Image 1: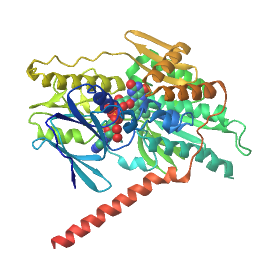
Image 2: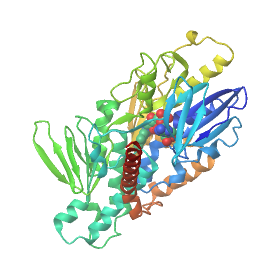
Image 3: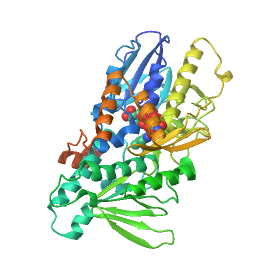
Image 4: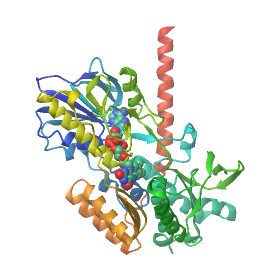
Amino acid sequence: MTVQPVENARHHVVVIGSGFGGLYGTRALKNADVDVTLIAKTTHHLFQPLLYQVATGILSVGDIAPTTRLVLRDQKNAQVLMGDVETIDLEAKTVTSVLLGRPTVTHFDSLIVAAGAQQSYFGNDQFATYAPGMKTIDDALEIRARILGAFEQAELATDREERDRLMTFVVVGAGPTGVELAGQIAELADRTLDGSFRNIDPKDARVILLDAAPAVLPPMGPKLGAKAAHRLEKLGVEIQLNAMVTGVDQDGLTVKEKDGTERRIEAQCKVWSAGVQASPLGKQLAEQSDGTQTDRAGRVIVEPDLSIKGHPNIFVVGDMMSVPNVPGMAQGAIQGAQYAAKQIKNSLVGKDPAQREPFKYFDKGSMATVSRFSAVAQVGKLEFGGFIAWLMWLGLHLMFLVGYRRRLQTALSWFFTFLGRNRAQMASTEQQVFGRLALEKLQEQQREKKLAESEQKAG
Ligand SMILES: Cc1cc2nc3c(=O)[nH]c(=O)nc-3n(C[C@H](O)[C@H](O)[C@H](O)COP(=O)(O)OP(=O)(O)OC[C@H]3O[C@@H](n4cnc5c(N)ncnc54)[C@H](O)[C@@H]3O)c2cc1C
């Protein structure tokens, strides 16, 4: 076990996560008289809003996932540690993280927890085997390989039914991610792959977007939802609402209608973009803080200053926090983390935590792209869609990518993809499809081995 040395008397802030909350929280402490240790289980800062473009061959992994260590290279008071945080001990004020079986204990004076959320299958985790979610780079690469692999298999299929199944793509969840992904699969089939196969016509691909809710893009209201649905239908996407998924297997899925009847959709490629569950670290914190609770999605119901009860120096931000009227979006995480950093700096100059101004979220609006040249956007009471919204979407996303070179690269990729037909990132491998399942098997075997060893020791 490695114990991080506590060498000097400087206040030590530990930040968990290198997403929007973790990175912006760390940067906000740049000029503070503190040492910061950022611990994350990935080496990169991931710009999740553009994951669907990696999944559909528009952008490369590097475009949306800069290495955290390099981003923070010039911030001398920050250290980056790779590790999966398994335990937070509030009494001992330590965080224990593990990298490939090697535990590291890091002491903290203040803590910002920004470990985000995972995909939720609403208690049906077995669905994940055949319907990956889209939360990580691995997910996006797996989805890309599954989409392109399905077309490859269809080219070889001799049976009509089999070919139809291989060319049916189902996206579960009609929120922004589902809408964006379904639109891009349709455009990939219609434009990029058009003319590149000899036995199949990729334009025959069936793309289905389904949701148990009665609307598309529910958080953006009925007008924008209808606009997005109309545009998707023009692209040929079938929208199936009030349709709850009750089973997923290798060859398709079972869907229950509102009236209780069940039907089957034969589809090789399924993607899950419905529901999120906050990091289990939230539950750990709540259990150690008297009176702090988590909500149904596992998010921590934080105090008005984003701390947890009885611990004014421990903050939970981003997708892990439950704050009324703050959506699980990048802006919520960025603003929450910057607010937490400010409170830490205030406490260093002796300001009383009891006198803190509560966190106030500034809603900058939300948007989703439906296809090239078309998006929907909501800014305050203003709602609009179409080309102007799409241009706004382009500008905003470029602005929030980390680094000038990355912005330039992304702008160039968009220029060639949206004006031409080709996409530059269309490589995929068998390992991308099966790597996740193989790794899960390996982890299961290791767990069983450990259990057997400890049973042998005990008895
Ligand atoms: C596909 C997709 C599309 C999206 N589109 C948009 C959009 O268009 N606009 C928008 O505003 N928002 C969008 N969001 C939401 C937005 O990305 C999140 O709200 C935001 O990323 C939350 O930031 P966070 O810091 O809380 O979590 P994250 O950004 O998820 O970061 C969590 C970090 O914690 C690390 N971590 C997790 N567990 C541990 C652990 N145990 N130990 C160590 N490290 C850990 C992870 O590796 C990661 O670095 C989208 C999300 C997804 C998945």
